[in-house]
Amino acid sequence: MSGRAHAFGAVSALLLVTACGGTERQSDGDRPDDPGTVTGTFDPTTIASPGDGSNSVRVEDTVATDLEAPWGLAFLPDGSALVTERDRATISLVDGGSTREVGRIVETSPTSEGGLLGLAVSPEFETDATIFVYVTTTDDNRVLSMTYDGSTLGAPTPILTGIPNGEIHDGGRLAFGPDGCLYVSTGETGDGDLAQDDDSLGGKILRITMTGEPAPGNPDESSPIWTKGHRNVQGLAFDDADRLWASEFGSDVWDELNRIEPGNNYGWPAAEGDSNLEGFVDPLVQWSPDQASPSSVAFADGSLWVASLRGERLWQVPVRSDGTLGQPEPHFVGAYGRLRTVVAAPDGTLWLTTSNRDGRGTPGPEDDRILEVVID
Image 1 (cartoon, rainbow, N blue to C red):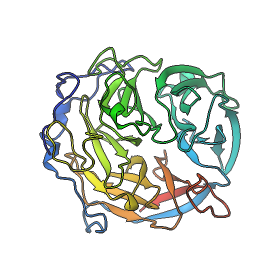
Image 2: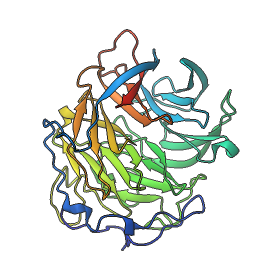
Image 3: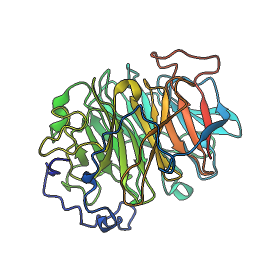
Image 4: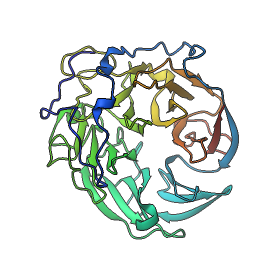
């Protein structure tokens, strides 16, 4: 790793961050002294060695069929789930083997990669009944909040607007952190300069409150920007030590798995993959795009799980207790086509969506599907 410069303010990684939900974020004293000592450039063709945290996995069931480019997926407290469909602009409830549409986001303006994308459920859902979505409109990408009463959606309220939109690289993943804040991944829409522009929300990971304000403790307290220098992050996940990980599409050379820390600059467009350039943070894992094109990441059973579109596989990356990573292992190579979203289910399984009807895949008779994956 080269210099870990924080490009928009001197941000100390040891500061406690005031949480959006009123509790303190875990101290960085629990993190390894220098996670950058892991070079993180793994050979994607090498199978993980026994004992390095790899598991056998299997598809146990198909929990939903006949979807069209499912994108966002999140569980409700009762164990049912909500799923978005990118181009149809619908939100559906998946429960007990049935799927039922509960609403449509009418302001959605689907593009090649834009549309109705990420979805997150409020950590206080049992009291506020609120969900959040990331949507492409004719003017921008934005985050909306709305209530869900178990039957239908309430009227959406924009809480964050002005995220650049485009035919490509729209980002779109939403994830609540253990601090109660909402993390939002954005893309640079094909304009790499936006990723380094502190006046643009494009090519960033954002951290906001549930009302859309910059979260307390951000590097710049007046800005929602948490990190910058991203091309197109579509995966966000926290591990069991509250570390944030992001999967990111590269261009033609390297896709990335990054550990996200506030104020860091991840290098795009000057850096792609392990660049060793001063001032930028290198990835801990990199793959060639034909092996990955990673659209989502989840944490379960001691590993990060990365769903891959072009690579048509589910990557497992073991996470050691000190935050270093084991050797990645591929699962389901070519078996289900393009894989968009992976989410850890409350029962310990993974839910995994296909994306064969997104205009770039070869749909099977039941596509698109949500698969239930058991980790043995």
